[in-house]
Amino acid sequence: MWHVPAMLDLDAMRAAAVVVEGAHDFRAFQAAGSVTRSPERTVFSSRLDALGDAVTYEIAGDGFLRQMVRNIVGSLVEIGRGRRPVEWMRSILAGRDRRQAGPTAPPQGLTLVSVDYASRLPRSRE
Image 1: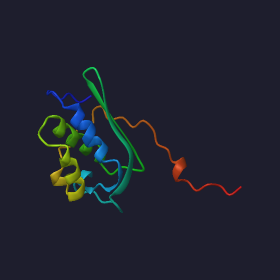
Image 2: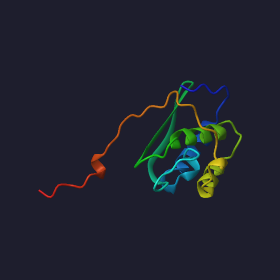
Image 3: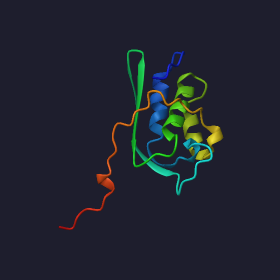
Image 4: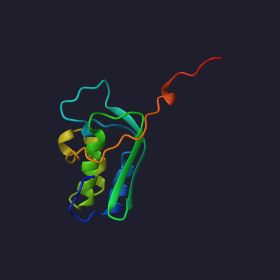
């Protein structure tokens, strides 16, 4: 877990999380200095949930850039702390500049739940 010693505006964070859904150029959320063929990815779902004092973030997509999820979470926390408005998430995506996004969240608590290659494999012609 990542302990954030602040009250977070979960409604604002939820609204911002939905902004990253869809096909986008995510270069603003990739690790500085990363090299990739294309920074374009599709996020199928991006959801925030709370149970007591614990907040979970779940994201599903067709692939992720290096530190993309950690950088999205860092930006969501900035919004949750009230340091940035929800609309900031849109401007980060549009700006495509890593320096404009929030800090990188620490890796503690980050869990890869599953990988599904089946949807990417060509179907058999039997």
